[in-house]
Amino acid sequence: MSKVIKIKIDSREPFSGFKLPVTAGQKIEFACDRSQRWKDLFFKSSPNGFFNPLAWIAGLRVRGVKCFALCGCYNDDVKTGFKIGTGRTIEIEKDGFLSFFANDTEGYYYNNYGSVELEIKTV
Image (cartoon, rainbow, N blue to C red; front, side, top):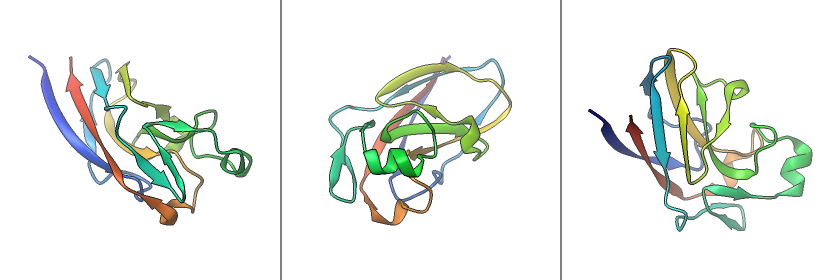
């Protein structure tokens, strides 16, 4: 039986306050309404993110993923970061927990505004 939960991801938090316990081999489905917007300084963005050349040069926490894309990672370790955007299904790689965040440059979360709601379904 699958379980669905909805959580709010605040763009100012480097890692979400909510930690999703996971087990290796488990499948998780993520969905985030593409009409939602959060803001990096002046730039409004959907959970899919936007190309920010300054952030790209400075170094985004999850490399190769657009600025302000909704991301997740294992055990608050951005080296394990992955893009969620408006939706994705993953198979969990290891036991622990997942946390979520807007992909931004380290130290620049103070100028972020808004949040998005993420729906999480175990399948």
